[in-house]
Amino acid sequence: MKTNLNPVHVICAAAILACSCAPVYVPNTVNAPLFTNRNEIQASLHAGTSGFDPHIAYAVTDHIGVMLNASFMNNTSDSTDNFHKHRFFEGGAGYYTHFATRGKFETFLGFGSGRVSSLYSNNIWTSSSDARFNRIFLQPSLGITTKVVDLGLSSRLVLVGFDQDSERNSGFFIEPALTLKAGYDHIKAVGQLGFSLPVNEDEIPFNYQPLIISLGIQANFGKIFK
Image (cartoon, rainbow, N blue to C red; front, side):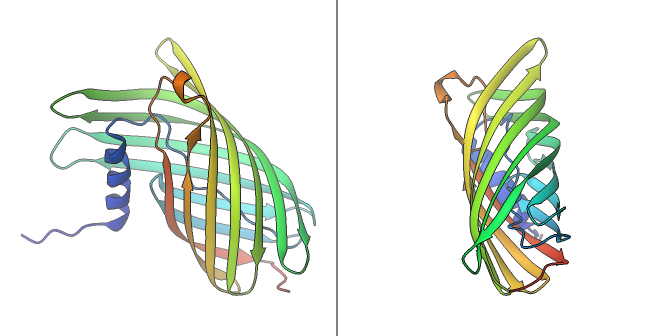
């Protein structure tokens, strides 16, 4: 019998299995628009270690932008009872500017909330989670943009809080991510590689996904190319 492997599911499953646990916190793809001008709109869809992540961002003025992000995963195993499911929504607003000819700087502040449930079991131990969570983020980015290639380096700082049964836990993470966009004018493929690094690792009582890996497609409207 021929088996067809979905590369997105392979990435998700490999990342979760690498943790050997049921991750409570799975960082979503970083939305780094690197705006150029007022009324610019970016809409994108990403797939990777956080599942499927839709993004939208809008430049309200020549220096103020807003964004809405979401993340969804429903990953199950064909041979075991293991699974991971989450849904997450967040919004943010921030400041952007440009320097030199193509250099960009931006920083966004935002808030999001969601729910996660997961189970990882093997012959040695069982790990499970069923929690609601909130997250505050501050996200500065530097980058360059052209008609063909955009390159951005972000450093998202997040404070995550979880409520499960009667327990409440929180953790602070630094999430550096490199984003590459390649295409032409208004349509570009997007790839991202990043990490989720706990600042207070010894004090975090929940499991987390340490990688951010995604591929996607982005449409851009209203951008003035220079």
